Length: 156
Image (cartoon, rainbow, N blue to C red; front, side, top):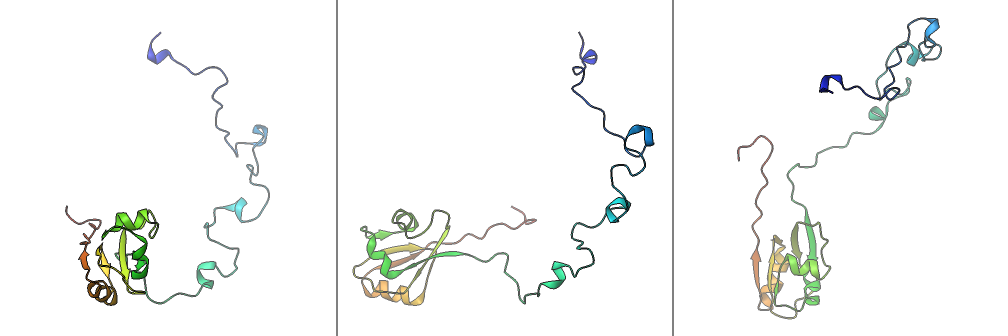
């Protein structure tokens, strides 16, 4: 047997039903579209709502826009840093302590609360009050640099 002699088993492939080919075919006259109406006569746009004011025109248009390259931070307050026992705190330690979620890529430290002990805190951003409170407790602040992501169409 050669490849050009191969054929599928009998009955495994059914021929496509050709509609609108005469009454004797069983799919003649209306060709399975029923009688009258828009769908029997032609195609309509998917968002067409039968003449009712379409949803896209009913909904009010909001002003402004969301910047496509905005940076989203997970927020951690200074008061929550006392939960972690180590003196050096970074995103990995915050994740282990349950202060940030597993999918939050960047961390910002905010200034609510007080720092009791000297800490070295590494994060992507700090508020001005958080910097002051960590420094006044004898600790230090290290900013993790945020590398901007390459946009579509930019050279590598």
